[in-house]
Length: 190
Image (cartoon, rainbow, N blue to C red):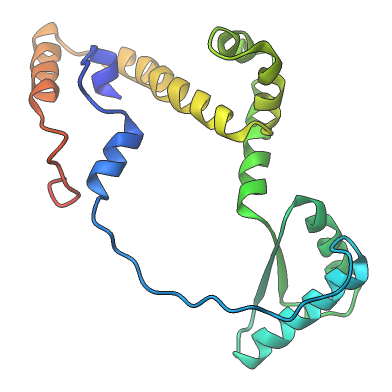
């Protein structure tokens, strides 16, 4: 952020920085197993109810007090309504799937920022027809890319313009950032 504000060219962005410092592959083996097939249309309340009952029974076998069940956006509301209106296990927690949650979050940012000039700014980079989809969160990857380009630049400008640094200190800071070897930095170095 500071490097962008000072105009340092070779400093990597946040994504490249995170890729560099988390380069070591740390992972554990997992097991993938298939669950019983429910031969009903996915949006059917009977299908959703059957899945919720099965999940609650599996959690009970494992002595889990809370049963977390994840649905995508179209089925999430139906599952919530079923859990709230039935006598199912009160410890069932219905979650919105991760991708739909992120899309909704991007849509909420677009809703809040409507009329702020964000749409006009993005029109200088993206096709005009894709801006509406970006603002609602449906063109997710484009919206994330646009926010990743815009947010660090705006924040660094707003925050660092408020800090009173002498010109000598700015030059020292710029030289330090320019001389840092970002390619060989690791998480342990930080």
